[in-house]
Image (tube, rainbow, N blue to C red; front, side, top):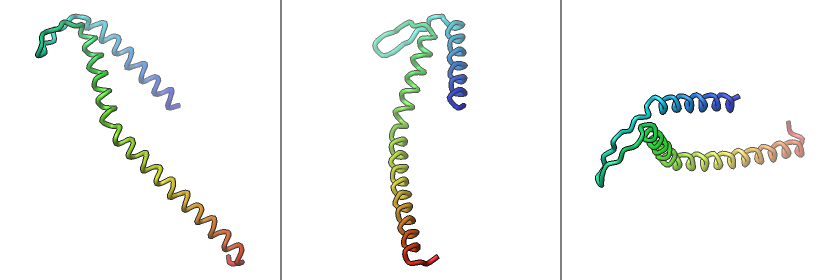
Length: 98
């Protein structure tokens, strides 16, 4: 279900972006240190969006790896707890205690 909702949102954004690009197809002048460049506004929007998404992904990589490491550590602790619990259950069955 979440995949379908994500796909609908992605398609909505793409259609909105397509309309925005078609309606704003005029050239804009970009001034930078070495010179100037004239590009269509829609291309500048796409480049800016991709640059922002890339920088956002790069900035979150450290957090994602940290959280994955923490999840692995917690899973090992749970496995250890389950082994200890199983041993305690077996011990109580062998001794006849309830």
